Length: 534
Image (tube, helix red, strand yellow):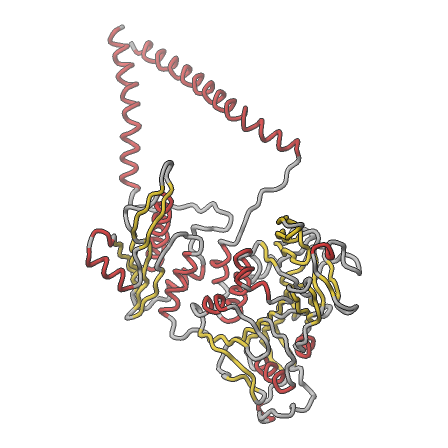
């Protein structure tokens, strides 16, 4: 009987020891194989189509030099790993055309000198411990090199937009020419310098004026017009018209009203006359202020010497489509992956009915409305805009894309005085027109971008779709997708609360009981088998 028990215990011990041996062997055999399953809703950890295509088109090697210190604050250790994982994916899809080098400049003076020369500085890290503030220094950047040119990401403290930045850097280095973007000037336009600086990373940016019925300079692929406030002459409108008719892409961010924030937020009609063109193409910017009581921005206001938070309907937050609520157009690349955009004092757009050339990109909730300026001065103080605007509720369009076959707004009309263009050079129509119209320009100010960073994504996506590669939008917009928790009732909240308290314990107890029963049954069978054998 002792022999039977010894044999039984030997086999039991062998089975226990065999498990880690199998795990170690499997780990060694599977180490060269990389398997990843991206379960995130917006595929955060999967290279986008644009990134893979840029890598597949490489004809010369691209080098990525990663300068990351091994000793980093705890919050940056995960970022370092994410950087290495992402670059490894680039290397895999690069198929030998993307080379990766990793350095720790803290270990070697020559490496430190190279990092500084390439533009990756040594930065100071502040880490808050349980009892004190710890200050250290190190490196957290990378350099993309191609032939004799470099693109630098000097400090990486987040990986939210890293794929977009890295793909854009490779594309900038390897493409022969950047798209030329003109910034319209001379009519009160106001593009924030910080926004302009951001655009220079992706485009050849130049100021454009209007002279003799043509743009000056005229060799631009797209024209961005932000916040015009004065009247255009007929010759200037003709220049814009012909720019679009000859294939140029036009982006118009214009306000239907001007708002004096110093005098009780007084709103008056804007004096620009761009509707002379836009209406002919299917869209009109109205002299009103859109309000949305169902989806307002929450702002801080002074009230009796103290700051209070209040809903401000004339700063509507346009969100992704929700059932019958249209919101942002989820089926178009420009707005499909943006969760929300905040527009300060936007104006509504009138869209020509049944016009297939016009695609609505953004509109308010069905509870929206508009305060018109046709009945005298309009005051936009918080107290004055809480009621539903006259005319009843209804969704108001604030952003639209005009594309397809467009006829010249000057078709059948004589060439305006002062235009020196020859009659034979005048285009009467275009088959591939593209005009993006937003009834607001203030959403691109630095203050607004700090409050609503996704506003910049709308501009970037619009430019990408019209001037570059629409698939870049997918990468840019990934980080913009938010998944807010759905509202629950008090009863549902109580159920979730008690479920968390007792559910886990019940699950563990049930699992333990099941495991005990299975083990007892297996043990009984093993003992019976060895007893019969003996």
